[in-house]
Length: 74
Image (cartoon, rainbow, N blue to C red):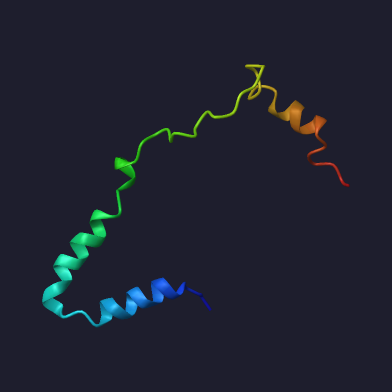
């Protein structure tokens, strides 16, 4: 069973009760609030927010994970 929020449930009920001739206007308004992925900024503002003193983190990923105990039984 999929649970939805009460707001989403109300929106569905309202849409179901719309007269057919109003659907194009309402649909256009909803689409206006949903920017396609191509319109979203990349990278996002938070991207690269982390800082490291080393530049070889990706190259050392396996070593770092091993040092932290990744993959070992606890």
